[in-house]
Image (spheres, rainbow, N blue to C red):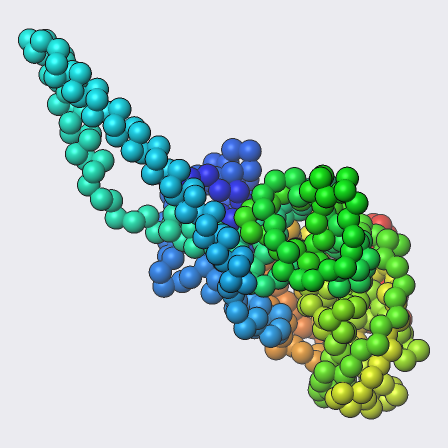
Length: 452
Ligand code: FES
């Protein structure tokens, strides 16, 4: 029996990006009704999808592990209680299907008996009885389990789909993540403050579906809020697929300035650049938009990680700077965020990033954010020598993602096609000025060129 799935879930099921599936719908390879596709059409359009040898999470895990360079989360299963609640929901649904099937079966058996009771001369009645008998027998033969349906059932147990209103953005909640953590991982600028259940800024109204509290919170909801179905996104997770109403930060001005005491988690030498990894306390993570800067002990640096990277903050520091001398475990005061070098995700154009030197830091943040958003059909990255540190990471992005292209060049002699691009340029001031001049010369309007 064919089921209808939304595009996000269908894309996960066959292990491709949502943007690639949207492309297939646009090109007429796959039919979609109100943003839903049938499992039957999905299999017809992607006959090579293999759910046994190439589990759906393999590609996602590959991108997370190799491309994002992040720690793969130790577990994929949610809390025991959430798992039990999801299994319970599925068994209720299953019992419901079974009840319906039994009722239909009884109706057909009764109809057969009634047909037999009619005087038997009319051949049409005999034919109808034969046909009903045949259909009934055929229905009783156990069909081979449908791999797609089975996989869909499995996905619904290990993850829940969230539709965010009024923006219409979508994401999945996996593992032990709260709604807030899952939204941030998906590149969504969910409104929040303390991330520890105190301030109430992450309030969300549950429009449909079930959520469950998985972290302690001290915030007191009013009776009116309780009756309207408000929950805290930083302390609740989704048990079933849910629709929630919540605020998002659309612009850098929406993000308040924060001061956070962090610890150095790791220091790594990348040629003449020091990769500094900081970690914020669990109870106060830094809220920022990809591409923004902060000050570290008073000096301004762009953040090289994206908000999707949990409590981890990455910076690329020139060797001669004072903070390059920090050691693992040192305390660092972070203040910010600042700056408006952020992704224009609603422009309708594809991003091209051009970076030189430590200009790669904010660009890395933007690229990771663009990947997490999964809304672009093409992401280009051009790096200009020298200081092509982390180039293996860029190559692994290209290997893991079909919509990502990467090139390293000595200068800007040859620019890629700029027709449908927004261009983000970062690096030393003279490099940015020269690149901007070249882009304008190529006919790119000023309004489509962005730099820190
Ligand atoms: S972010 Fe403060 S209560 Fe959730």
